Length: 82
Image (cartoon, rainbow, N blue to C red; front, side, top):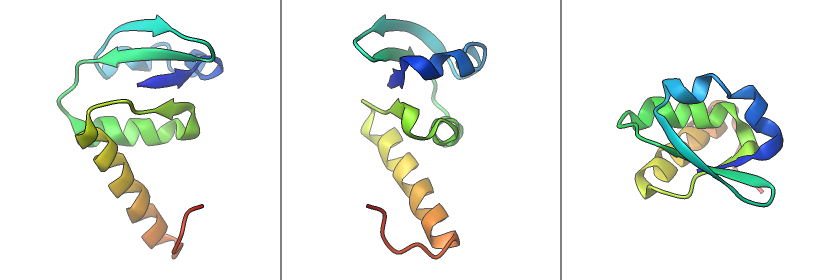
């Protein structure tokens, strides 16, 4: 996944808990690679970072995060996210 460079200071230690393997620096993002089969737990951690993360793959993880976002919207009676 891509992580905003400015945000990486907040996840220095936590990334190892979630299976961090390596990273590749890009312009304003760092592409971090993880080996983690717990998509539910990982998706919840991604939500913690808000818009500082962008999931590149796998599609199943993207779907899990979108499902959690939809559940939050339903909980707070939000019909549409712009």
